[in-house]
Length: 348
Figure 1 (cartoon, one colour):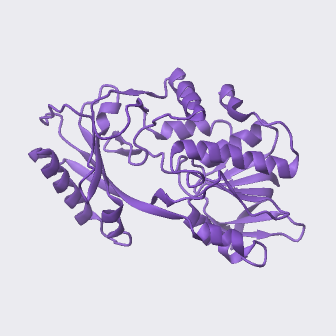
Figure 2 (spheres, one colour; figure 1 turned 30 degrees about the vertical axis):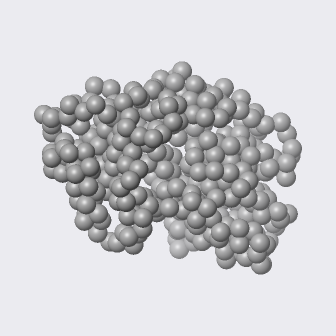
Figure 3 (cartoon, one colour; figure 1 turned 60 degrees about the vertical axis):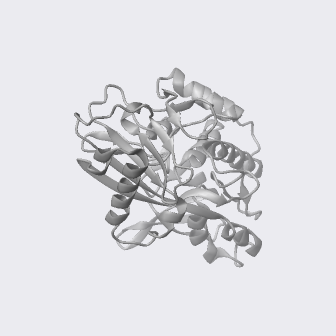
């Protein structure tokens, strides 16, 4: 039995878990993937790293600025040089030489996290606790955890699939309707590697394509790495282009199209002939219709709160704020003890 179960090991979920654990609560984090971070993701391909989710951190508010400073002090982050072609702001961009997933791994320090555990159902036990059943079974019986409170820190459409069966019987219909109103844009990410002798001679590390309907961004991902020997690029599609391939089984045609489009846009003939490439589909990449507050509370006697970057905005800053706010509300329901707040970063 745990005080709090957190579904989702992204930035919001890990932040909420750290807040509560540091205040003395017993907390478990449940994550369907094999690693933490959600869209703060890095993939190893052919011995190389590629950040196929979050491109970089761009600190605006106080919490993210503090977070970035802590990560820089620990040599997890560094500034990415300012060779950018885009209409974006001039706020410094920060990247992780070991991959952006290092940010989430840092936040996960000291937490009890169950990886590769997809929660397939959530119910209330007879003695009024949350029971979270996993897809995995032992002797035909679903593995499960029980908790006094639950934080659902995953994209709203995924939260809806999990919580909709509880509508009316346990959860208010208004709460479920609010979840249903949240929308996300998809994105396709192409990672491509090139021979060491590729003629780069580039005067940019990142390009935003503001006027192209298919491709949104390209980054020289290998420029984030220390002593990179081979060029690696990451390309992100537009939401409209990704929408066309939302349920496609084979994404190879989409990958080839994005490579060809980037080649034409940048006038780099060799860009269309990588030594290897891979494509990843982010079904819930960027919140397009988000909840206006920093968390969504079911407001029932058995605490359940949803949070994520879709609460209050659509950025990493929103995820941090949302995780902290969700933890604060859960704390008010259970013990109402002092929480560390932004000081939770100081223990690392």
